[in-house]
Length: 203
Image (cartoon, rainbow, N blue to C red):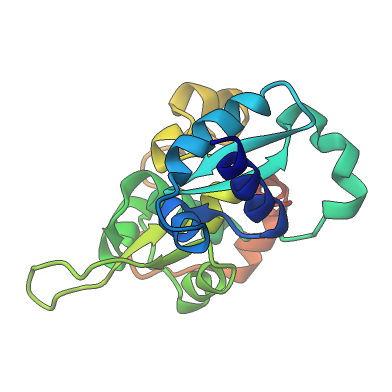
């Protein structure tokens, strides 16, 4: 098992993307048990500068959360999102799998193609299964890259309403009658005005 643990460590260290247990077993000698080796390896790295973390259904070696500030110069990457993109991403994360029509119903405005395309290009969302309803609309779900970026094991680890309000992510709802109606669309000028909110989604 010690040798298998070393092999798993070597693979995770050399791979930039999270690796599934199946992929680990496929690379290791026949009869190896990557899942058990991961248990020992994860415990061995507890309290160290890097940790073994689960990302979705895969595993990776990542910098310990409390030491992330040391890597700031190497990892800072400006990735501003418009207000429309932030709202769309949040709806998908909390309501997945969700259709475009459902996103528009929750937001109260139509979702522009550019907003969805931006999130798809960033690989933070992907197409899910089609709904077995008339028209068979496609659904959207968040990706493993999204979970990895925000240090989440699964979408269940997303913060609740209380945490979002404390972080300033939730604002008071506008007075009745001022909510945009369906069909108003995403207005670029309004998105730019909300640039401060987009900083929450920068690397």
